[in-house]
Length: 169
Image (cartoon, rainbow, N blue to C red):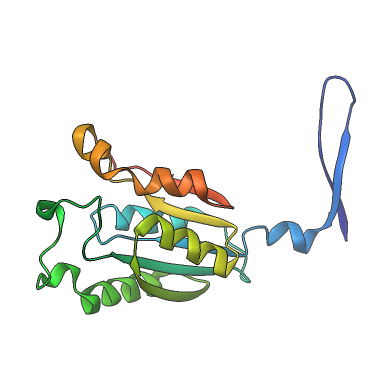
């Protein structure tokens, strides 16, 4: 079955954009990359994902990027302690698996090391993501100037749409 997708304007009553099948229309978001950093906002990001209406054919890729050990933009005080259980590979993997169980569509996990924004964009390109969902830690002042914002860089450089989830107020 075909449906016409278009835009109504004041000049022309209807402008035809394209014709798509209803199946194609339903599966607009086939692949969603969800970037999680282990912070408190991760739960809110997952809740936002659960609020999206996904096709049964959709796939969600949950990812975490471990920052490169000696990033030029990272200050020593901001770096988590290597032995900290909160940021260990196995802790993060278990956290992602817990989120994975809550998602009703097919999921995959990706844990990688590198510059967070670059790796998120790289993974989105590899998976041909239609949407990236990412949290914003709400950095302000000097921290934002020195460290930059991963979510801002992802929004500017990604080849797909980006949904930024802000912390609750």
